[in-house]
Image (tube, rainbow, N blue to C red; front, top):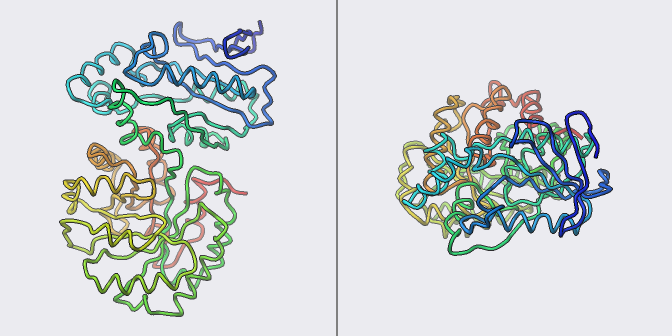
Length: 442
């Protein structure tokens, strides 16, 4: 037995092999626990599972959740892999405790889902906090920021580890569904984005046409100075185009955009996003399709209603015909009636589509945190979680994004425009601080 600082460890033998069993001193019954494989090598990829405590599933094999089978499968995979850590996250019932967890079960039997039940009982959809898990991981790895293979279906856990300097790749942990837990797992998919291990939020930078003409090289050099490829986020570089301005037939502009995009052809995490107003005119799309045919890079599309335009429906067949890599739809409160259409909700559950919640529409109006939280809450309750926010997010306001992610326990995308420009000119210093908040420098 070894005592190191306020940790104690010993070797235990299990059906999945021998492990070092670590415990950190703390409140009795709540001490952080972890198991690590013997002769752990932090210089190699480390297979990690952060498993939230679940007495009903882990101990009594409840079929209401998938926690018990996940625990067993994770320990089996880590033992077989031979270089891994299993952290038992002592926050029963998403940190509500067992009493409120059983209350939540009763509410679920009355028709609420786990998301709504947790809000009613604890004030948040998921009250878990991960500092203990990160601390014990740092301890076992001797503060070496190892490359982590995260055995999880939860993209928020990946973000947490990346915030603390780890490079993380997710490996799904699929144990199957049953008639007892199907509603529970569906809620995790729809409202917490679990099981979508390829889903990546974005950090958006809305450029202007003048930026492409005047600052192209500066923008390219700045972006290439960040570690982006293995991050959980992508960069969306927005370029506004307009049929009314003749952009769809402007050959010089098309050449400029193609040249700009060619610098990122080898990057899967940098996307060129064409911004435009949503139109219901067929001629608009004929002109747009011709414009798109002249582009020689993989492009994405961001659409928004024109000012004062109230939409009764969206023509998704036309949008799909554009063959864009990603679709971002900018929506304001005046068009929330679109959520009454189930097809609208289903469309924005696909991994390459995003709803951008924005009542600022490029004016840079800063919303306070509480109204943004309430806006996001209302949309998630309708079953859409592929969300982005916009409206005055300069570098001094970016902590709001982390706060929102910590509350909702989902990755949230972000778009910035006006606060990165000064009198219409792109401020490279502000852009550097903005991107540097999310991406480490090379």
